[in-house]
Length: 451
Image (cartoon, rainbow, N blue to C red; front, side):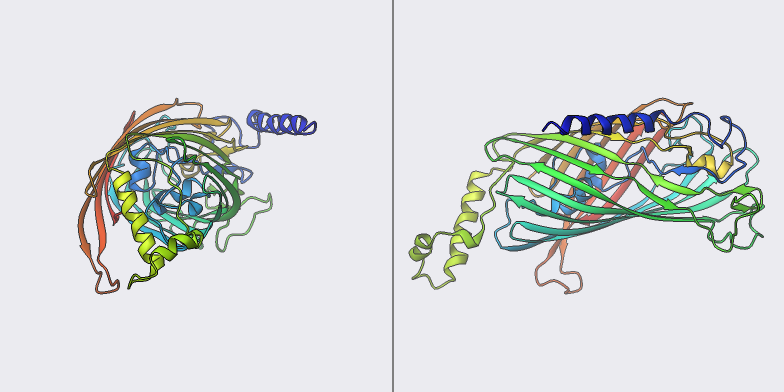
């Protein structure tokens, strides 16, 4: 214990030093042209781009940790059982397609200017996990793609096609069904292509202008006490740093990577994150329900059903399930909150700054994001209503934090055997979400599996 305090003090000191190391650097003064490759792109994204549930409750899901659609927020999620889970082996999966939204000429990255338009924004999310007893293993892949076009000024790049893929591999373990721990790896793959008629179009190698790939660990925690109507969750994510590469382009005599008049960066970094939160459920339905492991059913209970023509174990499970339905009425109101600290990125600019080839420093300080959400099941098994808010920080000196308001609904619309791929009908849902803030608005509709 005596060595813990100095270690924590050293960790805090390192974070502070990293936060203060922002002045000067080889990039030059704010607003000056970029004339070197000795810089990093800060791959920080303030507005929420995620599943419909994540977006609608303002991103405050780290303490929920249940369901494939929110598993990227907490690596402990694969170990958390649904109340309806009654088998040793279980699974959960989801796919969500977010159709082009109306980002348009908004200030997407909150840098204080509307220099670029975000068009044809498409988001695809696939996720799932398998549970075996207290162990769970999951994978999630989110892909977003959009066209980034210059609105005004003399463009080096008139328009660019951006694709960002985020991969999460995770494993969780449940301790006494109340404490859940998780470990994972999060990766990022960014590709940027010149898709417009600019001075770079005729330069060999610009078809794939920029590529970055990186992988880093993440940790998750969830406390779900059965005696209380609350959950406490936390997640820590290490920075994902990847070397920025470009095909068929060699460093010049000064060691810089240049495409015409454009200087490419040395690296692209997704900064580290530390997030924690609390969820509280109001109403008669319990939030934390003990998982009934069939392997722990007392032999004396099984003997009572020995004369049953059905499988005794399944009969007992069915009885437990009927008791659950009686004990757990549908109405509920779930309140969630979370707080996230995002680390600094040294000697970095934003994506728009890179495309404009003008210095607009990003990530010079650590940033703080508070979030709040609420959801209720308005029509049992048919309609979810959600709302939330979050304060988006700015990573730039010429802007300020802005408050987002989010609302959304999801409806159970139909069931299908999906060309007879499943023996039983699979339920599907449609959802609509809205996210509004200063110089920003985004509405979209999604579809996916209903749970």
